[in-house]
Image 1: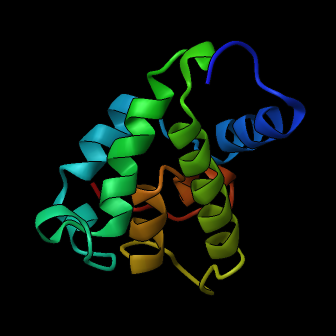
Image 2 (image 1 turned 180 degrees about the vertical axis):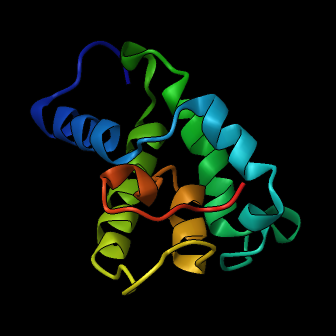
Length: 123
């Protein structure tokens, strides 16, 4: 991709920036935690979970200047948007502390404890 984003790409980009509420360093640190490695469906490189692999891609995307986003990056942003929106609708009742739900969302760059509804995720 080169140049500016078309309207559809801009909408994907804007939604991604809204849903992915973890800074690159924050996400990198999370991805190194035991909690991060404890969740997700394996299927990535050397048994790495799909969500964990996605988190590494998200860090790369967030460190890329908007004009330099590739078509693959935009496709991954769209995938992340869908994942986060679906999983936010499945929020468990009660305390989300130390929940697999929370850990999984964080692997995908969204910290649900930042939404003002309380709770915390480890690490």
